[in-house]
Length: 205
Length: 194
Image (cartoon, rainbow over the protein chains, first blue to last red):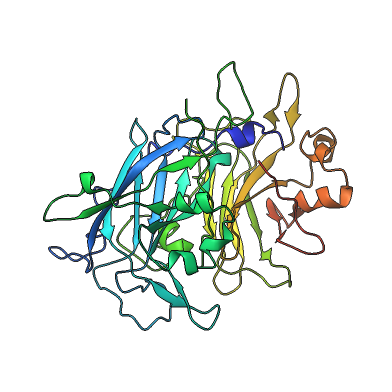
């Protein structure tokens, strides 16, 4: 439908006081002095709209399984153990250039009851707020080189192969912190300025 | 500027609350509160209301792992712009046992839509859950605003009256409304491609 103010506006999270540890899943649930178990990684990138403009102040919320492929949830039944120092949630907002960075551990793949032997590739769930409610997005990020990606029916629910490839974060050696954490880069594009112009500005949704 | 492609949506899966409402999911101590659980305070201007409902799948079963978000204008019909005061935004989870979700909020005013025109008071709702690949946008209108519904530009786009009825809540006593959402089947709620 043609958008109205109800879709072109959206909540502002600038006043949400994020805690200093919110974006570091390796320690935000851990006991003091301890860290989550698993390969340490940085996930970073930029949030744009479809015309390439950075989206500043975007709230990104993430959730994931631990390094063994186990979620911290009461409905979870996988036999891999919980990590007492890993909760599995984190959040961050983008800066004025649309840039964000998170620290976490590499999630493990896990089996799920679909076919007789289906495994989810390692992935991080992302929930994203842009500037308008119509930009609201939930998606999943995968890791370069994971052979399970192309076997996964949930990945395959995206029919366009190039769109799937954009969900796969490449290893980013330039952002890797030596002797600490590898880095993966995941850029996100929110719908934007697609058709609607308002107030004489080339914006809209 | 570059013409980029929107990132593909993927299902929120069954554990969306770990990321979006960790306290409700039993993960305490990471965030002090879940975002969006409190929309109003006692002194928030406007008529304080409760909105509740179920989300039903195509077989008529209540969805028990959904995330529901609301975005709405304030009592004067203005969308909050700076995140202070009434935020206009709320988030709730379906009850894991019953599937019931609810918001405590205020009734929004009519929202300006072009010169001299207005949209009837409404809540914009967004739903994510396992099995839903793209978050669903819909609206809830209020049953008492029949005159405003007649001139609402969005309701006017829905040609069959039976379909637009799926966007109108039912009164449920004093200052309370019930709004059930049907994902598929007979009486499927109207969802918007925004």
